[in-house]
Image (cartoon, rainbow, N blue to C red; front, side, top):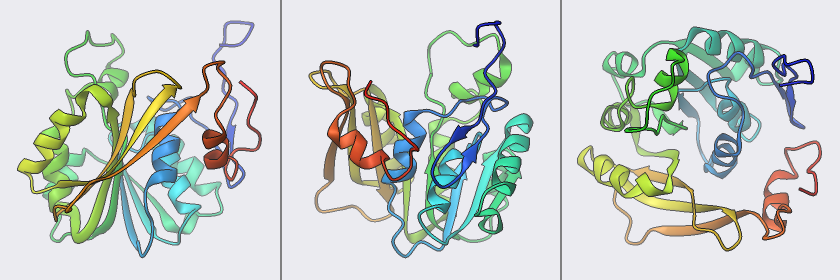
Length: 247
């Protein structure tokens, strides 16, 4: 909020594009940004962003490769905002926004067509729901359950493709078990720590239709004990942020 009590409607500026996100259910945050940077894009020609919100992950991936990207989002104001963001970017020709429920979108699929599927999915399953229905549908699994997400991904993902998402760390083992039932196996993960010395609070995970001999594990620390951003954070984000403050 600004000093007059009004919502901040300024755009979020990256080096590659600008992003409006005040109409979307979820604002731009480190979860989506780190996932968009971490996802591997080698030889990726087709991408699906599930629950795309303002389009931040789609735009980050578009800035890293020449893939054709579909973004599926059920919330109409979010769709309208991401459509504007896509149109105003240098990657407009490669981005396509779809206003539809992901379950319905997956049911209509006739073939596994995506090399990469990414998602920053809803993650509250037992907390009290927000009185804001739009935010509840986004943050809770009332509209898109993990089992439904994995089932849809299994339909849409190519045989050699990868599914990348971010979830709270305390829920990752549950998600791995659900994904396995749909033939999706953990191949790579990134444990994300909010501050040095703290436990991880988020985890990025990459799933494939083939089980790995061993799971590749990385570690990412956002802030030092004095609350300054780590050198690792700066190294990852300097290619995208216009500037990175000291803290």
